[in-house]
Every structure is written in C-alpha cells, then in structure tokens.
Image (cartoon, rainbow, N blue to C red; front, side, top):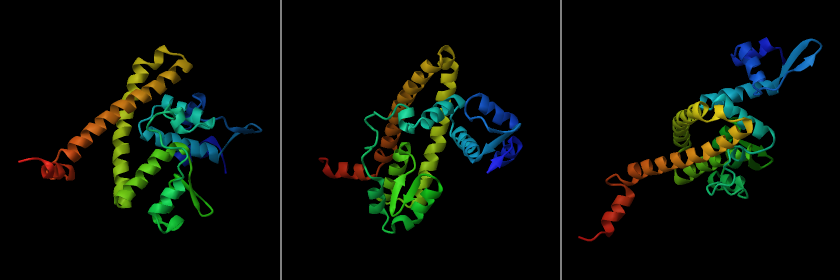
Length: 236
C-alpha cells in the first residue's frame, strides 16, 4: 500500500512530526518521491510498529538505532548486541524444527505453532518450521523447553511476558544511565563499542541476580524437591 505522511500518522497513531523526527534520526528511511509528493509504503508502517514495540520494552532511540542498523545490514540481533560469541549463545546448528516436532505431535497444525507464526516468531515452509530471525532463537527455545518441562502454553507465555515487563524496566535504567554518563562523551563508533560492552556487563549482572533469586525462591523453600532430597540423604 501507499501512504501520505498523514495517512501513515493515522495508521500508527503517531504525530507527523514524530515520523519526520524518526527520519531525521535515521530510524526510518526516507519516503519515495512521486512528483512533489512523498509516498510511504508498508515497510515504513512495519518499521514504525517495530520501533513502538521496542520502545515499550524499554529501548531508547539510540539503542533502537543500533539494533535496526545492524539488523538491516544482515546481522542477527545477537551479533548486533555483541552476544554471538558468548558461551551461553545457542548452538546455531541446532534444528528448531526437530525441537518443535518432538514437543508437538500435531506438527504445524499445533495451536502453539500457529500462534508463534502469527506473532512473527516462527515461519512454516512446507512441512517444516523455521525461525524468522536467528536472533530470536533463545526466546523460542526457552519457551519450547518450558513446554517440554510440562508447563501449559498459557503459563509459559505468562512467565515470558512477566520476564519481559521486568527486564524492559531494567534495560531502560541501563540505557538512561548510559545516555547520561557514557554516550555523550563518545563519537558514534565509540558509542557502538560502549553499547556492546554495556550489554555484556548488564547480562552478567542480571544473570547473577536472577540465578541468586531463583535459587533462593525455588531451592531454598522448605518442601522443595531439592530440600526433600537433602533431608533424605542427611545423617541423623
């Protein structure tokens, strides 16, 4: 479809000034010119919707620009954030279709798979399921592994939503601090390096905090499976 800037503003609920601001900041590529008229397309609409979702998850405009620039150049979201070589990165050779097939006997007709396709996380090609974006692999594998542990689909998605809401707030805190204390004193190339370092540091801090909290909540409770085993093996 084709849109004027007013049409695009109506479709997204954004003021025309915001759309122009995103163009000036390099978040949105310029419209096509037809005579004297600026013409926007579906790609502009999808980009604005993506920017909106990322902002809701706590990303700053500077962070969104880094993600979109790297991803548009063909890099996965993991590599853009500097996580591609981390020891916790998922095995890129693992076939997501095999994992899906082991969990869902209905195959591509499974309601969970249909929902994932509608969300733009998975894609169906013939009788196989593939990832839309390799950078989404940790998300997809994590949710599928919750299914494998016995969590119902609704519970797994509620857990993921709860995590994203809280992590989005934490990410926003990191970004606001970086925009105040780190980015202003650096040129764009140095800021990109700093962003990668910030992600690595944030991942370490959040991972440690989450591991500690989970250990206290799940293992430290009386009557938990591990507590029961400890009591059963301990001496009098």
